Length: 139
Image (cartoon, rainbow, N blue to C red; front, side):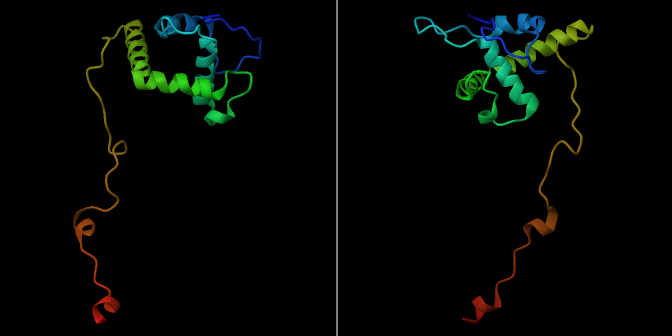
């Protein structure tokens, strides 16, 4: 059952293609040793995660022909906390850069003024103390 779709359904635009799954599958953690066998198709869990990211829907709005939203969310959250998403991003970035004939790691970054937000007010306006109410001082 691991990684092969057991339910025939219409494909979504966000579904992993076979060649994409071949790259991703070796990096997806297997079931915990000694535990109950995994009862969900992990490729379909990934398809659910990518559907949500591509469509922008909420977890509870995942289509019913994908695994239950609670299951998909549990894997997404577990992999986020374990750092798997960062590892996959780094791995894919390095592979893409190598394929383009570039160094594996970027050597520079660009941050423009629109990327970093600061306080709405600055300088004296942000630190000027407000006036006391006349009503409060009259009593």
